[in-house]
Amino acid sequence: KDMPDADIGFSYATSMANAKLDVYLTGKACHAASPEHGNNAMLAMAAIVQGVYGIPRASAGDARINVGQVIAGSGRNVVCDRVKMVMELRGLNQASLDYLQPYAERIIHNAAAMHGCTAEIKLMGATPSLLIDSPELVDEMVVFAEKMGFDCVRI
Image: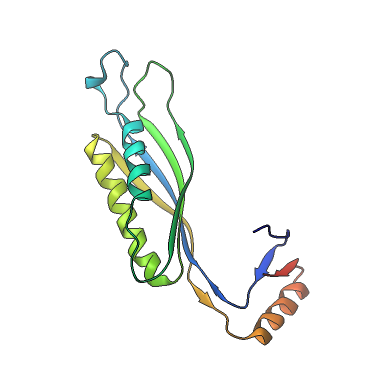
């Protein structure tokens, strides 16, 4: 749904827990004419993308995963040695994120190893699930944030 521009959005509901990950894959470059001399980080990235989108969902709650960006490669005739991926994981509640995140991290490390590469995962941000069950509290939070100079919206 389209959201109005604002610094902060407040909702009378449950917000999803999320984790923002940057993933760095390192392989070994070589000439594409002799790929057996390298370790192709692009192949590891492809296995990771397929793997994380295929994670079975759990009964703990709804979950989402998105690989939003991939930066890879250095030339058309060079086996790729470096990949950066940015992804976000979301869970309807903390339990669903706590299921999804380690599952995704296992896939990342194992897919990298499968192709002779290494993976580094950096947590770039996370937000726990939050239930605001009081419309009055939302109103008070908006008033406070606006006094602090933030542009706010009720979602």
